[in-house]
Length: 193
Image 1 (cartoon, one colour):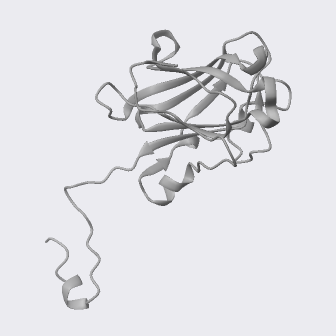
Image 2 (tube, rainbow, N blue to C red):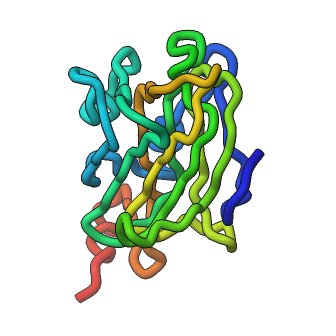
Image 3 (cartoon, rainbow, N blue to C red):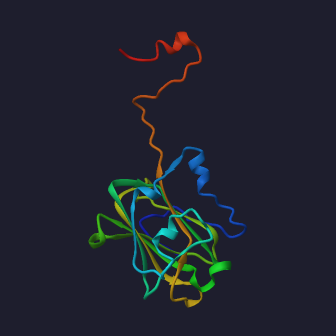
């Protein structure tokens, strides 16, 4: 079940964690902007705070501590293009702590968030790639993203999320592309005066 503005399909790892979010980074298609944002969670158990979402370690996790929905707020210094969110979750390890129903919301701040999409995932085993596109299928431009865990598998109360990665599209400028010449003669003519 998926609702909201964005209709680009979600990709979910089911076996052997086959989806790798760094693949598009290595190809130069996207850039990882995860650590360029301010992060805040609605609650956490001691030792399982927001820092565990950003430590690049799939063995650690953020664990909520309180009533649902469990929220992860991601705020940027400026309006930022977001191509997708990558959420690592593993049902085999986390069982009833595994998120099942998630809402992705965007806006300027907490007071004007609009749901971009709401979806359910069934027993994920690795990365869940969530495209964040507008009605024209372009990457969204936003100041803030909120990930709201609305329900867990097996009616679990608290949630575990092991990692979140935020990708922005790699921008290429059509105005100037720096040519790479192999000969000294051509390289000497490569700049404008």
